[in-house]
Image 1 (cartoon, rainbow, N blue to C red):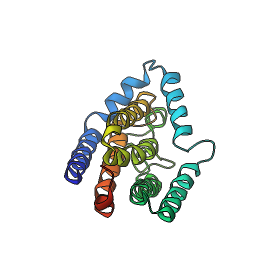
Image 2 (cartoon, rainbow, N blue to C red):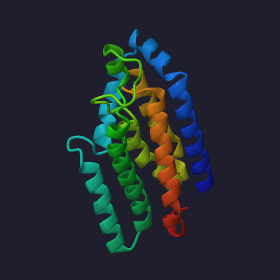
Image 3 (cartoon, one colour):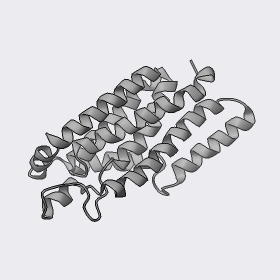
Image 4 (cartoon, rainbow, N blue to C red):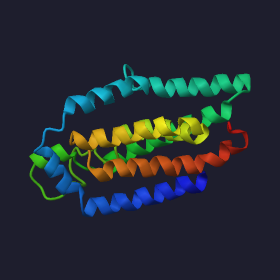
Length: 200
């Protein structure tokens, strides 16, 4: 499983770099001139934000995960699984929080409505990597690793969020791929910590 995660992370990182220099801008321009049914995508993201603990309070999800680690440790049952999800989630959210201002990338709609040839290292840019993909993938991917029966719905959620953020011109293709690479790398790095006691 760890090797698969590392392969996905590496492929996603390579595709991120490739998308930056090839398809990001053309796709963003094309989507900007189309009706991509934003309500459909945004309503789905809104529902997931409540399910993932981002709404109504942005720290709700993290609070639940930390409480789950504490309770499961006290009960000595399932603590390693809780630790994997909490650790990957916290690492991803922290990395995204630091990377966004460092890269200073404009969102597609910002780039298309402001002057300038490039999308990175711009004032107020906060597009790379995608925070929404990082948020949901950092919950879904560790759960998919731990519980194989959850893989199909978990992957479906991640794919939906990636498509939704690109469809509404909130992110470039490379933004969502970069977030996926980050989550898979963190999950692979944390996996050895829980593997001996992971659920079957």
